[in-house]
Image (tube, rainbow, N blue to C red; front, side):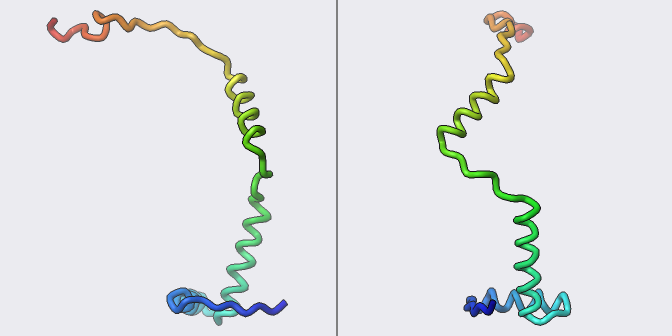
Length: 86
């Protein structure tokens, strides 16, 4: 497949610089970048799209799986200000 792309001058300059750093021409460098991007996409596929309701359901399921811990603590005025010379 042949594709013609038009890039702004600053991006074209970046392509040329990066290609030169790798000892490649610009076409080879762009092919490399595209292949790498596609390889990353295959290695780390995007999670399946979920509706808001599905997400909220999964979130509540996760929260419920941890249970509720109703610990006790001393929040009296005396405990908060203890040792402050009052």
